[in-house]
Image 1 (cartoon, rainbow, N blue to C red):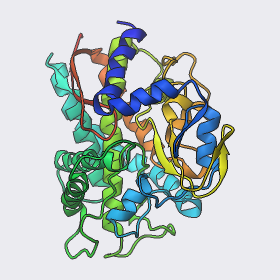
Image 2 (tube, helix red, strand yellow):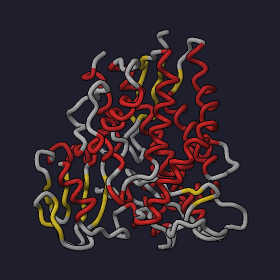
Image 3 (cartoon, helix red, strand yellow):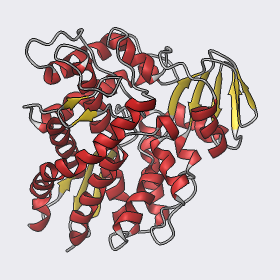
Length: 388
């Protein structure tokens, strides 16, 4: 197998769940930035950074992740934090990695045990249990990891088309609210006063909400009191962290298997696989005021589609652990500046540990089925079998 085989396989995840959207992205990517009616699509690195850092954003607008989160939490909870709260979130999650690694390490060992016996595994199931168990521990929830992961994935899938460009299916709003309510029931402690359905239907790209060593952090960076928006924040964290992990880990494993990357230095391998797979390939945003994106004028109220996949050259540059892309490029898959994902260190650590644990078995892909309903491009099933 080769890089070209790996790329052909990975391309299937984009066209399965959102074929119209990603076909449009491919057709328009020759332009750094392009206006289509009231939508500005940012493809180049310059355009992507302009959209994130140099255009005022409306974080509560309809059709954005922040707007969806605010709507389902009664308007009291936003995904895009800035300033002190965002810096606190990143510091806290970076510290939490050391605490959480002992949680996911035995889970990973148990889930990969069949490989030692020469039996296949479904990497999507492995990733779901790993992500759900980690999120439950992070939020101090007495919930089975697989159960939490299933609820979080359902919530994201039901709501993805509610804020992605394209036609909305009849009843999608009610379906999203119902899925949100089911997830919220898992993360809400008894006596909570969070509004029904207080969960973000994050789809492609919302970073996880912050968590302090003792619990979720409020918008000011302090620990939220009982009965505040903790439940909605916890649900958002569960949705974001779980869906990103379930999308990223199987795709990374498939690339390693198809392109025989198992012997690569782990740090650069993780960096390059996160760049190439770009688990959150585009960011839906809305402009709050005038600006320009790679020379394209932006007006207040314009919808923005910031294509992180193209900004990091994931669409035409294969992963090269021996010569990885510069950090200022590869890190863009986690956003930039005040909008950088606070969960980046956690994502990197989990991928590193997972690929390190898989490497001795040098697994190959038996079957792969793309997920047609997930919020993020990914596999619904990826069967790996050991070759050693």
